[in-house]
Length: 255
Image (cartoon, rainbow, N blue to C red; front, top):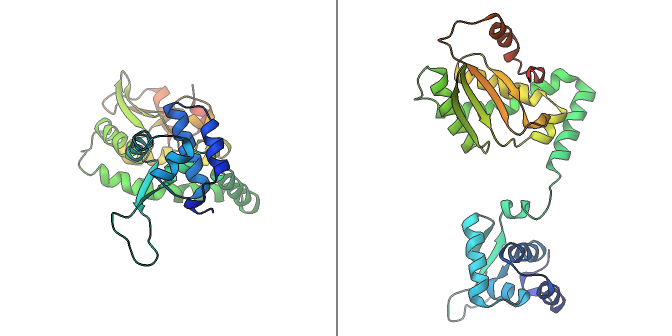
């Protein structure tokens, strides 16, 4: 990794030649920080041809968004007068915006290895273990939600949102509906539905009734949608059949 103080004249020339605009400027700031590890506002401003006020406006916005963090630059030897320089570096979130990671590829390769050596049941066991901690955290969040499955679904939506799933719950004619607008493992789950199945069983246990997965992001739908039947309604033959499948979270339950 380069030292932050080694932003070279060629770096400055390349950055200055790039187009301006808030989004593009922040992309250029991110690229410099990714390459050099950290830099002061003065160094970034010089590299990008921006005034101190302009670069600080961008850095303040990136700090507020959680894309960068700031710290005092370590001083070797005796410290001179004045405040030590603040350096800025990318957070994990900020690094993620700079380009795709290979996490999904590694996870999928690991699951393929497990399936090849130990079979699909081993993949299912792995998936169940992975969601066990999520279930425990959500169960704590649902402690005061009562016994009504629909009320628990609303509380669960809040807990899942805290976990990064951007979830919501709503009442529909036949009961309730839990929607997850983001799936952290969508690309891997597209190949290994055991992950969705384990998650569906967790939802069923947490709301306290059988549920039916209607759609998943992993299979190309815009939202992961889970139907939660209203327990006050008399079960029909169709809903009983859905219950038989809900505990496995089968992806074949999609309409």
